[in-house]
Length: 174
Image (cartoon, rainbow, N blue to C red; front, side):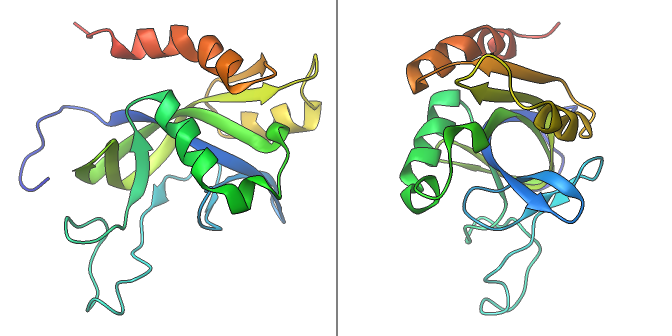
């Protein structure tokens, strides 16, 4: 988007993360890149191809750079499923799904947006046991956004559990 935006606040989309051990403890990590999302710090996009392209601020229309979010939770799950090489190295309890705020320069793309800045808005922790790890919930609480453990055993159950959040997000605000 160029010029003044058509919205008064940040956009809100869906995305998936992996959980990653870091020096600072358990953090959210991008599915495709090894980018860590730090608690209480908005993530700023960087173009990893910009040196080859002459350098630019992310995102730009002619590039694939930016922080991605999609319109529907199904698309976030599908994206995670298409990243098969990562899924083979992780357990389902290492995934986090959620809503993410996007702002700054924003480019609309096929299923959502690519943005300059982002921060989690609401985190959903799928787990097939009765209780997720206390350490995991505590680590995610450092992001200072709602963290909701979900007892689910399949993608279908996860989508059903996310349906109230999706319906609330789709309602127009007045």
